[in-house]
Length: 155
Image 1 (cartoon, rainbow, N blue to C red):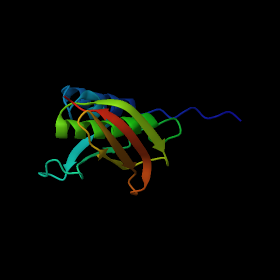
Image 2: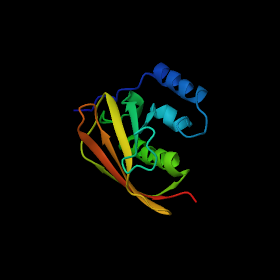
Image 3: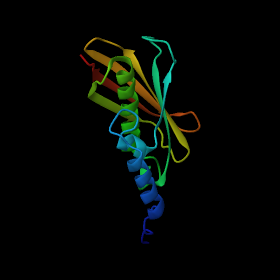
């Protein structure tokens, strides 16, 4: 039995999404093209508490056809990118622009639809290097992926 032809994404929606992302982008934190293409919304917690060990960068974004793999779930590359961005934006918010030195991602379950939430945080903050993690959850609140990373701090 032959496999059915793969489903195609809606080209008109894809073009409209791309145009919206490129029109509103600025190559700056939170508004750079790739974050706009992924549909990321940013939130920093807790607000107004400097140098807290509980600092978090929370991202949310919708699972769209453009971000799915051929199996129909959210592509692991999109998940890894969002987790990396959540950590990088937290470093920027706290200390200035840093750089990912290494990143490890563990995928635990697929995310098929809905809104994804991703939270980046420090596990150990240092002057030159910091250790971080990001947890990505599906709309059911269940952990779908965990990233751990080493970051070069600015300075």
